[in-house]
Amino acid sequence: MVKEKEAEPKLALPAHGSATLPSVIIDAYNAEIQDDEGFIGDKVCKSVFWELVEKWRRPLREEGEDPFGKTPTEDLNKKQLAEELEKGDAEAAALVQSAIEDYSQEFARVIQRFLKLKSWRDTETIVIGGGFRGSRIGELAINRTALLLKSEKIDVALELIHNKPDDAGLIGAAHLLPPWMLKGHDAMLAVDIGGTNIRVGTVTLNLHKSPDLTKAKVAKSKIWCHAEKAVDRDRAVRKLAEMLEEQISWCEEEKLMLAPVVGIACPGIIKEDGSIDRGGQNLPGNWSAKGFHLPSSIQSAIPEIQGSETLIVLHNDAVVQGLSELPHMQKLERWGVLTIGTGLGNARFTNRGRNK
Image 1 (cartoon, rainbow, N blue to C red):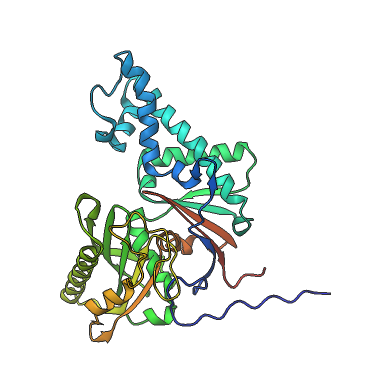
Image 2 (spheres, rainbow, N blue to C red):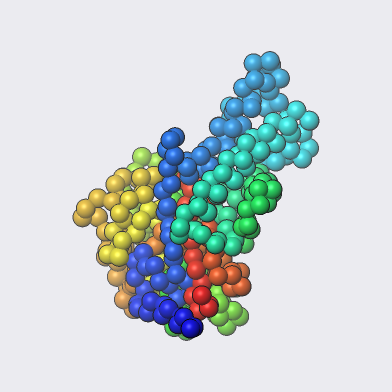
């Protein structure tokens, strides 16, 4: 007896935090796995790597042999480490290699924990994004992690996110919308809210070149580092609205026809009503407070875009960054994304329209 294929959920108009999107089903996101030491994602956020660098500097410093001298670890950057790894003396290179190895070992363990989740079973590929991926040191650590997983016979591929991580968090917003909503438009506005920065940009769709958004690009963007300023939530939202207005003005100058929509990526669990349930603890102020509704705040500040009523669509930031990879994941059925930044963002997808 042949089992009938289960019907996929019907897709309605774009909704906040929706599990059913035009091209994928979101099986899970923002998974908070814990062990005896706390959340496992905290073991591989970008600050952990610098803690490992400091760990390996400490014994050398005590012997007066620290290759980085008196420079505090917090004043180093990944570019400097990459240069030491490539051109520095053997001791400096060994120090950097040791930090990469420790980080990769931990990252491999974290990935294995994710793959044990029911919602992450049978994941074929995991895309790695986030700010840490956007460096040579990050790339080396991720590739070393992939080798460790292969050595353990873990059947999952790791891939570096194709777009620059900063751009991916904006480009992915276009995949929150059904294709018909974007037809006839040149671009759309996108926002990526993180624990350190808020980034706002104009995504040119280039649908005439690639209906699947492969050619979508960030034409213009602006970043605001809220972590460096003592700002509250309301000030951050006002700044976000100002940045969007600047993008709209630029698009009008460039004669770009904007879709009347703003796609917003934000940390945390996004509820259907557009409120943020939990997970936004790194944002300035309490974004999960009752009475605060980010989509309404932005819609009030920008009620129209080029003469049409503004639609706001809010979703989790790891989900949105992962969606930027959709054109490259078409041959797969189940895939996921891990974003390494202030925290570890995560999402697992199943492509729609495939035989189960």
